[in-house]
Image (cartoon, rainbow over all chains, first blue to last red; front, side, top):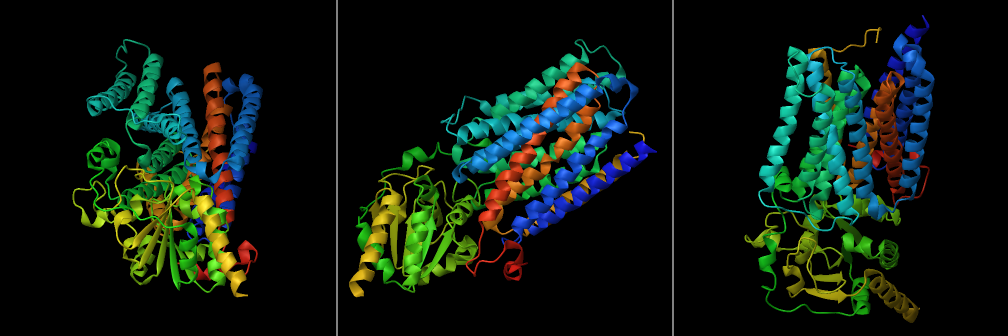
Length: 482
Length: 113
């Protein structure tokens, strides 16, 4: 009776969790309700975790001698993993968010892989389909884990250069096929009872080793600029792995949550790749950046420099200003100063809007988060499709720390590697100011034609310093007139 | 498990299909401004793997299973707790320029789809 009650409670808690996950995600589709969405999902998670301790009421006799130790270990693991990650997540700077998400994602993949490992070592599968699903989940989870760690290391700056070796794709292909072959061998031997040559356990170790190596090899050659897409793919991978292991454990909450994330991650990946005008296969299998090197120095004309104070004053007397922020803004930690400047402009009745490119920042939507952190209201922030028409009728565009996303070559120059990428049409405004550290190329290493066009002036310097000067110039105007 | 939670072939495929569809449709409605919190929010949701880890660890009957199960729970708990912490932090930052009011009473109708 007690065990039945326990099972019903677990079942109900998981059902509630699955519902709250879906409902919470739904509420995340609007900035106004998003904060409550994650809290609802959090309640679901806590309920499911608490209920899973009821599993102790329904165990095999063979487990009983281990039970006390198991419970101790479980509490310990929850405490260490949970508290550690919680504290790290509370502390991390918003600019470091992409690598943080990567590492949490890798943990999820590793957990799914570990569950699969227990199933495989214990030889728990009832039939062929369960064994195949376990192996598939293990493969995907392991790739997601080691791949996420590499993605983290790249974004953190631990691995600086994309590592490319000759005939890499062939090597990767062979490694991947080896993983499949070992998995196939495990299935064959388990089902047919043939002599496995090595023990099944050894083959399982080999299988995991190859899968982990494949994750590393697959991620190493991909450049830092493409990491967001890669993290998004691994996010989908982990979801898929969790869903598959949920099937193996007979847990519908894992199946639903995992598959929802798998599909969501896939969609998000496609959206991101589209924003960069590249296919997902292109991101994964070609070496972005190599073709670019030949091109620089080919630009005619010069970059015209303007003083920060002049640019600030012109914006003060404009009627409309659009600000295009890029990662350089965040790198200079200048979001607060930028918003201070914007508030001054607004006080002078200037209409100010922010235009965000889908791949601004190191992760889609990261720029929005960084601006929100500085206190910019989300109704001032506009996405590419919503604002691109407005540039032509705007007085001044201020580009801060952004480069490739405003490069008109994407529209005009067929030989440019970014040709066809949707860009913000900043060049169509009456006047463009670009705040930039110095003369240099963007993250992708491409020369920007905008900087040489007649309606564009450069303000060189650290974004923070430049904005302080702009603020001062506008403030002193206010004093002079009063 | 003695109580009938077993999910066989086609039922599993139906669950996967419907869940996948639900994920696709729900995310399709999220504005680009929320993509980062969304990515970390969905990252949090697959942290439910910690429940699978707990099931595995509680049912462990060898030292090897205990060790691997321990790591499954450790990693799963990190995924869930960390994913929640960063998502909650990010979402708390999104404010409207309308007069500040409590988040749950703010003008939700404005950006609703």
